[in-house]
Image (tube, rainbow, N blue to C red; front, side):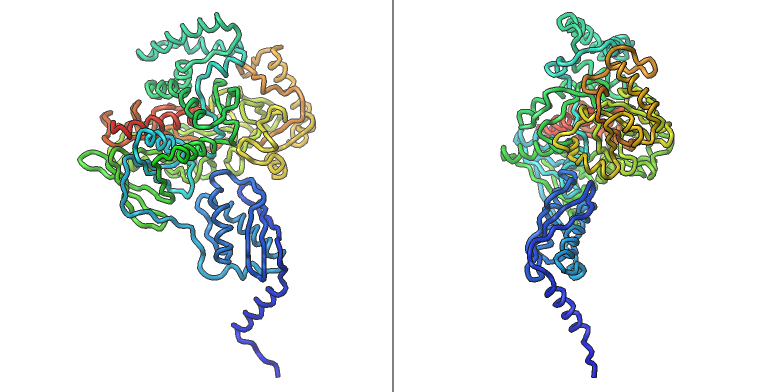
Length: 631
């Protein structure tokens, strides 16, 4: 007579069978993460997971830090693979869990047996009511700059960050910070084309008294410079200001611009004193218009700024507290003054954080909010729907703008939205290898634009190319690669494997791999190199200069497929030079300050590449000081 097992007994036998067949030891597994494969080592003992280590990954620093710390520990502590994905790092979370699952299979265990019961969640609880001198909404570059500045002035600070990590858009950025820097820029030669750019700024008819004053100072400084340093690159905060104003189509507030450009050099020095190491040269990022871009030597991408502020808080024991996963939704006003913030914590509970001196909005723009993009766009004819990607963090949804508007703030420039022309065609990410103003060719192998142009010009030209895509090309020698990693910390080999980067030993090989006629591409390279050698002018596109780091004289070569994506929203709340938020009448709203991309009025219709970091960190510092002093 055959005996039937009860379901419970059958389950026990099944589990026992798997456990008995499982091998003790350490097993490696891998799975696809956000950027590349994630490799883990899982130690198994008697059917239990004893340890999980992440061996190798190319996940975005900062964004991936929490899942890399939380998920392995949760798996071991709770003996489960049923762990909630960390908000904002979904693909990294899934990659870790899948890699562990792969390792368990190799150990002879059934991963399904570790996916039962309640999911382990990462949650943060904050006090229902709390108070600080200064409350900052947003933990990106502007917010952390403000936090350090306020705390250094003696204020105790609470930062509300809706994501489970700091960084906002800053840690996703390439990291360029524009600032006039005589010591570094004077290492470069000044071309005739660059001289003409300065002279064109001086020829503009003055539009205001400040415009006239800046032109007068530039003229005096420029004439003295070329007399003392013939053929050497010129720059000044005043030229930076007028170049920014002109290339934003004069739609910005020149007072705000000049406040940024004259203090940006101080931002560079301040960060250096905090421990950030700068490259001993300046470069020119996409759409930067002048080789005044600084970037860190000891960090990949914009992560260095966040780490520098965090390290400073720790080293100086500054009174800064961060409430993670806490989403602000309303400003609290009392007799016309902003005195705090209402929010929800990670468990959905309502919380209030009161500010004795001031609230700083540093919530970023609205590049990841399709509804707001479509509502406000005035530049792209309604094309910024879901078919257009974004370089932005998913957290950049414009939260601070309606909060400020409800509190009486004036909004400016909301229709001005910028596309970055050089993003990944499928993801919208800035996973760049050929950083800087390299060579742009369409799918026919021909140049189609002056690569040193402003970003809106580059994007419009790119959209008009066959398929709406193009190739950005450089040599291995002049690519921004160190130890096999890009400026964003991604593996070049992995990018090639994923089809996001093409490498060719010769121009002809590069052409074949990009499906371009080798003869056409070779002609394009030869003409470009002739221009870079000074043998001819760029009569077709009027490129003013060719940096020594750009020429395409010798291989191997790289080519990246590129396409424009939404990158920056230039509009937002109106502020003055003290970072005070202004009402409809241009008067400061007591107790309310703002910095970074949540503000408007600084960039006009077009943001110069490298000015966003300068804006966020410089005005973040100003906002923190102003709030701490209760201006």
